[in-house]
Image (cartoon, rainbow, N blue to C red; front, side, top):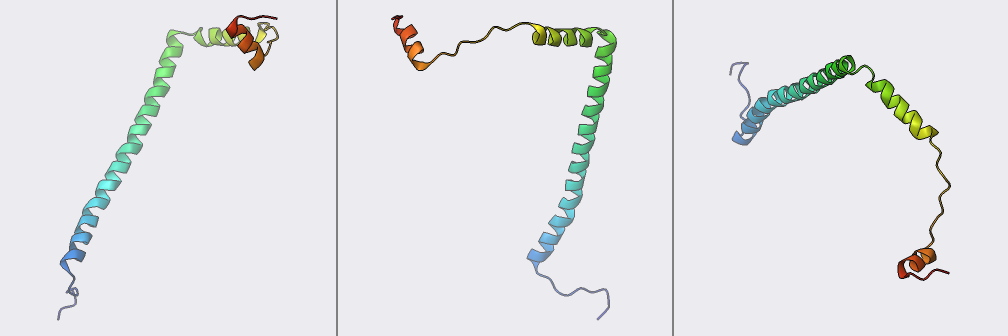
Length: 95
C-alpha cells in the first residue's frame, strides 16, 4: 500500500469536505468585498464632506449660529397640565 493513499472515507464525508473546501474561499471573498465596500463608502463620504465645505464655506458657521440662537433664546416657564385640568378644558367647564 503506497504512503499517499488515504483510508476509505464515506461519500457523505467526502461531500462535506468538498463543500467546505468550496465555501471557505467564497466566504472569504464575500467578507473582503463587504470590507472594501465599506471602505469605499467611507472614502466617498469623506470627499463629499470636503466638497460641500468648499462649496458652502459658511454653512458650518451658520449652523453654529443657529445652535447658539436656540440656546440663547428665552423660554418661558411651562405650566404643567394635570388630568383634571385637561378634563375641564375638554368638557368646556372652567372654574
